Length: 195
Image (cartoon, rainbow, N blue to C red):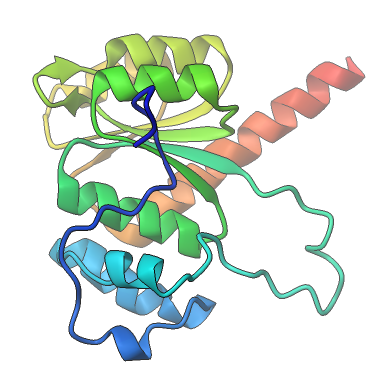
């Protein structure tokens, strides 16, 4: 975590996994990461960091189609340490740059310090509700997905005009909703520049 409080792509030194030798940062790791996200297991993050693995997936650019694509940045704001780590690694394996926050204060600092394209925000960050961050994200036109186990979160998401994913969730569902939100945001920006 930086002095300002934003945990920008930092991997906490908590726990290791016995199978670090078979960890390779490739798209083939998606099933393993998805399974660990589902089970809530803390896994190879600390070991991967110590081994010097990069934080983003190398996209297959053999066709040349992905070479000029800007890596999108996602804010992951989640207070639960296991879920926070799993979500951050999942999005990194999907090719996103991840900015991490575990509290409302950290999320506000991250938003002030980083340009993000999208955000996955838990409604409860510790003892705080994430409404101030949600308001700022929506005001800036940033693709935002609310994540929560609370039944009343759906009404909150509707009030902000953003999608809500309830915990526990299906990983593919979350990835699809985030991707859709980012695509809609990109289309809105294109329409505004042409309008």
